[in-house]
Length: 440
Ligand SMILES: Cc1cc2nc3c(=O)[nH]c(=O)nc-3n(C[C@H](O)[C@H](O)[C@H](O)COP(=O)(O)OP(=O)(O)OC[C@H]3O[C@@H](n4cnc5c(N)ncnc54)[C@H](O)[C@@H]3O)c2cc1C
Image (cartoon, rainbow, N blue to C red; front, side):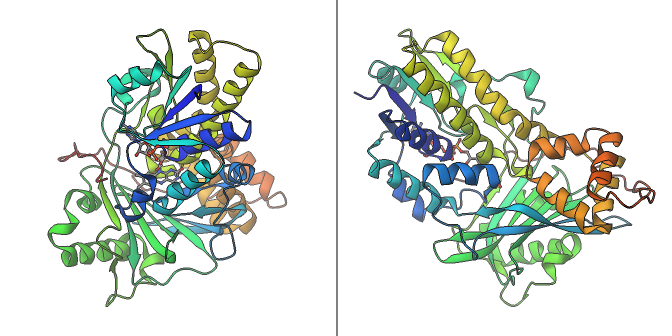
């Protein structure tokens, strides 16, 4: 019987399972549905995997999608919608990739089984979890933000949000000419939120995508609260109009005659509250359950970090488990506390960066971005930092840090930083009128 059981075959559960298998540790994954069913499901998200996650994928031997038609090197950041719009475009040190999770997760589940992992289709509730804990030395819960989260209490000191900070709409699109070379655009819109345009590798190749992160109560939030399926054509006209106003770099590549959501399953709408939970819980038989991925830490998607953090913590957790097995240590409360600390250390920068990005930027961060709009070397450094939480947190931590970041990447230039933008960033949001779970 396998000593380690993982509940959930999402990215966190699969990266953990594959990593344990690579150390020769037998693992069973229990998951609520046959992974291949995801291939015909609704869009789950629009996930960017950045350099550290891609390195882990190479270590796991699951880097199936890399290549010149998938690797994304460019990020455009546009401060739009105010009196002084400006843009910067930077090149990443190593490429990011967006793969449709409806392809990614079933493929990794196949890899897991092909390498000797056991995968059982079984929806797990708390009773079933208790029963499974009789058969395994350690249960790891990786059921995402909706699954068995109630087992793991919220940690208020690390969870500043009590309601969704953004209302979401994400879709694969048609009628948008894709940027070449492959790039994404982040539009930061004071008072409205953010619009991200990127390109996702799907079963049919690379397609354009959009993620709307709307402040509750803003005009943009209608893309989340007004149901797409009630009147798709009117909805698409509204989306196109928002792109025209707030994402002009994307809008200039829109063909209005063919623009729209790519297919009836290619969108999602909703919202959720980012939460950090305790990473472990005692079970009634004296054994323990650990949480990993979104079950432990749910981040808002604004910084594109949730899955990357889940993968990082899966690797940290695998290391703890392998070491404990080698030392013949029990999976007791002390082990769980240490494992939780290791997981949190691997994911905390992503959470801090996400929570920072959800706030209006202070003037020195506007100065940093403005410096990038004037100097390609600074823009490149900002682009790489933007997807690397430790780097960007340090660059944005204080006016002195931002100035030092600029000086480091533009060492010969001695001009004064541009004046802070007079933009009032996000006015206090109204309470959201609708709070729904993401359509799954
Ligand atoms: C619109 C959007 C955009 C995003 N963009 C990014 C991005 O750019 N970069 C990024 O890193 N992250 C992004 N994220 C976040 C990312 O999608 C999540 O952080 C990540 O998918 C979480 O992985 P997970 O393995 O923890 O959970 P999940 O991927 O949700 O997997 C959970 C698994 O558990 C199974 N399960 C659930 N309940 C049970 C049960 N009771 N019994 C058995 N099995 C169960 C599910 O079927 C599934 O297999 C985005 C999210 C959204 C919504």
